[in-house]
Length: 367
Image (cartoon, rainbow, N blue to C red):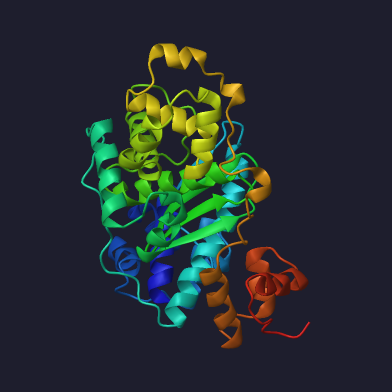
């Protein structure tokens, strides 16, 4: 608990733009070294000092003590429509932070060991788009993703120790990558069309694998051309397209196209790859397989964006089985209460019970 409070005290001070000397004066400490020792976890903060910090910083006590929420930690990068307001993103980020913190805390209580090593790609913002695509093609082979990587990518991402959650997000939010000490996570709006969900997963994976060398912006909407942030998103797009549509497999389909009408071929091939037809057109353009004449004949309004036909697209279960299983164990072992679990998920008790049934788990409490 002392480590948690120390970390959050420092984060709260930095968020308000206060120096250690300024907060030292406000808290009534004799010298700055006292606060420095508390923030470094070298000295425990007393109950009186903590209550004073709550008053001075204008925060509630739970900000410092609740291990089932993120406070002053966690870096998010959102894929969102330009109409997504900062307030909407902030509110949903607060909610998502609770889910991720709950996953992490229950893992600690249940003995789950996070990996000490985090994989990273040897890319930077100075890397070429061709290099980003080549790295993705290599991962397809290294991870044995097969001819349709969209089918197997999620399992590969989970093997990296990354939490993948399918959530009910506002329509203007597609998903996010999140880095939290001890946990990486990808959030995907499960109501998005199938092809976009797969692309979001591949795109956010790129950010998680390159976060230290090229941190993404908090939100990726409408970035000006020529900026570093725009360059990073373009690299992520090139990586995602190559990861989901390997050139060796795509070439076979392209060469066998024959005289098939271009819109029909794009739509059927995209459905086979479980991506959007627009993403497939963009991939072919980057490979220089579509001429300017070909592009002029393509009407984007005739391209599907759903991956498989909509009636063949299963809606992903809410959250994920591994997340719900960990929650299930936590309730059985008394690591959190039923009401607390429902509050974290923003569910009624009845909806929480239904969540366990959907994941084919027993309901670990009486209704």
